[in-house]
Image (cartoon, rainbow, N blue to C red; front, side):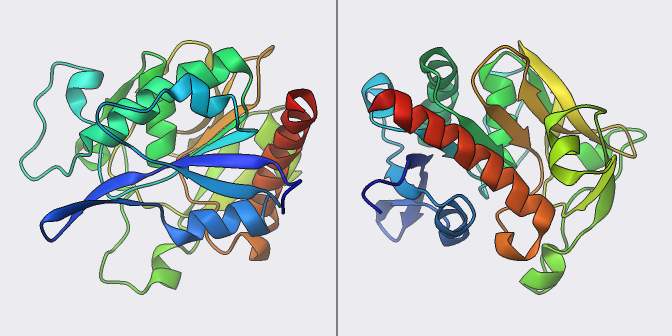
Length: 251
């Protein structure tokens, strides 16, 4: 694996007993290995953050994962956070700072669920804190009492932008994806264009407008059983191709 492209994954800061821990979900690590053929490296979300420019200089790609926490709303609006909303300020500081640097330095980015929201906020966009309370929008949350295979099963169709990256990967104008998110994209960040929308109109995926480095952000979880879903696998393979190109340039 020494010659494999290096993909960094910012971690979650979790309190376990009296001590804080740094954690990355194993399903994301496995998807980097099995879906992209790359070597995953955890980026600790510390406070204050690491020298993120120095970190990115050693990486060929950046994967922003999903998480149980939500971005603190003061980063994108003057709305108060709702009572009980789980937050991770250390992760916010790391991810919201690393996205514009990755674009500047030409590091490919694949962002999933919370990561999609991080990309949007880092580039000046806003979020719905509770999608299910917005008039005309559906409830995009999973049932936490369901087994994991049911939670991550295809939940609804998305319409793919004609001629877009996802449409090319899918080879079709429509795909079916899982849905496990309470927040969602409201206004788009700078330089982002829509790649997919749900039938209720909610933006489900964005990419960085051309010309620019590879940046694809999706609201669903393509890392789940990535080898069993050709569309999900195609997303990781497209990311991997960009990482390999970056590795060539870096070396």
